[in-house]
Amino acid sequence: MKRVLTIAGSDCSGGAGIQADLKTFSAHGVFGMSVIVSVVAENTSRVIDIQDVTPDMILKQIDAVYEDIGTDAVKIGMLSQPGCMKAVAQGLKKYRPSHVVIDPVMYAKNGCPLMDPDSVDTMISLVTPYADLLTPNIPEAEKIAGMTITNLQEMREAAQRICAMGPKAVLVKGGHAQGDAVDVLFDGKEFYEYTAERIPTKNTHGTGCTYSSAIASNLALGYSLQEAVRRGKAYVTTAIRHSLALGKGCGPTHHFYDVYRCGLSEELKEKSGFEQESTAL
Image (cartoon, rainbow, N blue to C red; front, side, top):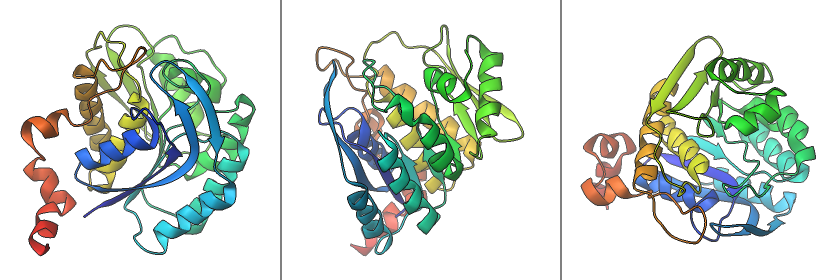
């Protein structure tokens, strides 16, 4: 079975962060593991508080995964401050995992900050060079690229600017724009666009976490970057279309809609090794 690790913060309300990542991994038929960087007391309406795990404990969690199980892909999410970033960068340098997808989480869906604004430069210099794919939304891309984004051409320009900072590829997500949800992928040479109809719902808590985890899962399953993004986009769009009206704010997406309706596809069973593992059991 393919193995995917998430390194991120937790979300006690279950819609984002580590919890969303593990649900997404399971929906793709891959084995999910986690390194918790921060414990976040949040819900659909607000972030109440954040308690960071010590850098030493972050590294020990990473060591525990790699000395035993290993990974086929890694997704990195919320890194709140420089100490967390330095520990994660040290782990990435030590183990050099394949298929690193980094979601540079700066704000919760309700607008509450999840990253110290003064830490962006540290993230850019220490962590993003390890990214096979960086997945900022428009506000995050504006912050990283140091520019305003108001149209598709500026999304392309931002993707190029950010790619020059070290990531192998950049996906600028258009969820904060108007009209159809258009995402722009720049792989260092070519641009690719992914379009989906914008779904009129406020229940989009954890969409960035879910999207990046879906891409990491598909990379672990052996798909190309362009196909992994396409499949990730389709997955998160379905999760949003069937999102859950839970809580008083931005509710969560439905990570298991297709699985509950149809079960795991034969293609994913074959790629994940699910059938072989089941037979062995």
